[in-house]
Length: 202
Image (cartoon, rainbow, N blue to C red; front, top):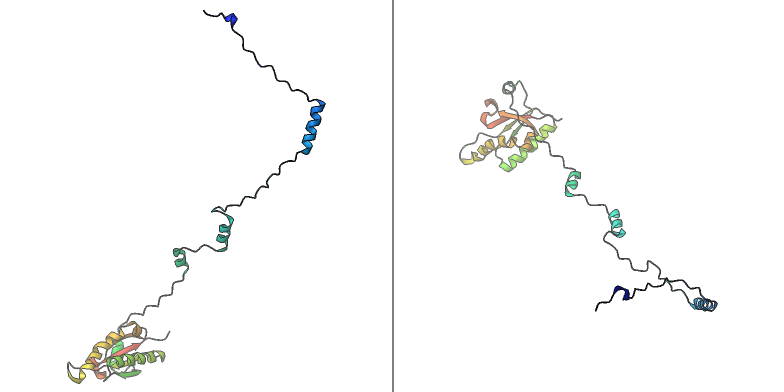
């Protein structure tokens, strides 16, 4: 059997809450309790140990104190390169006219050097010293006698000097002292001697 809608109990809404005023006795009790209570102490902030971060001030200060190292390319650019040694000037042959004047005695030969009987080591040292002195003394033409030499026997060493002296004069250490050289006239030794033009002192 169905109940009619009239028999349903309506929902009761809660009465509105009203703030009740304290009585004199309650207020006096509250004040006495409030006087006895003490406020809780708050912990001071910043007591936690500070954990240094990777970007803390200490590494930054270290970077400021120690300047950054330059890269290898910068170091190479800053390093002064040593000045290369000046190249020895090339040799120039003695002119035909000057050679003719030397052979006829119209140009004077300032000094002579005879390498007969010397070993290659000694001949090289003596020739270099001779040309250095001629250069410093301001000489112009000198005569270097090597000897014609022969294939065998005691003259073989002279044959070596005949071949070696022109090669020595082509070296940088000699080119700084010598302008050029030519085979001497037969009257001055022919194939066994050289006219050498000494470089002037600058």
